[in-house]
Length: 161
Image 1 (cartoon, rainbow, N blue to C red):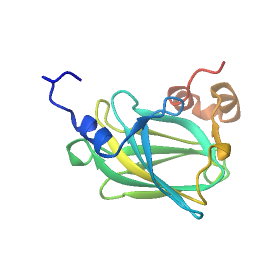
Image 2 (image 1 turned 120 degrees about the vertical axis):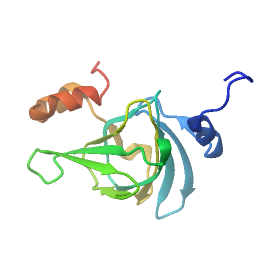
Image 3 (image 1 turned 45 degrees about the vertical axis):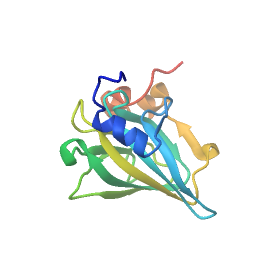
């Protein structure tokens, strides 16, 4: 950003919350809390990183909407096989529906609902998040397992090696 350029809302948020890129998953994050029982991060999706790829962790993760473009740009969460039937659940987090907990072990992804906008959330894990509990979704394997959801899986994953 040049000195003549006015900082964008996302520039201000990245600086205020010390957000760093998370290129494998997508988005920006800063862990602002950790103890023996839980962790919490601020997590931002914007124009550059507009989605979080399908991934799963072995602990529950509670997402809370904090802010968005014009105060209310929602974020969508997509959870595969939420109820054990192989379906896809779509949750919109916004000021009127700000919180959702993703159960342990479920494949999930997120994206900004409005292209070109941003959404800031917090993600609270209990027990504490550890990278050893994190698994990125493989596009080919997820498409084979959840063939009825191929379009969204292809959009919210990186190409398989």
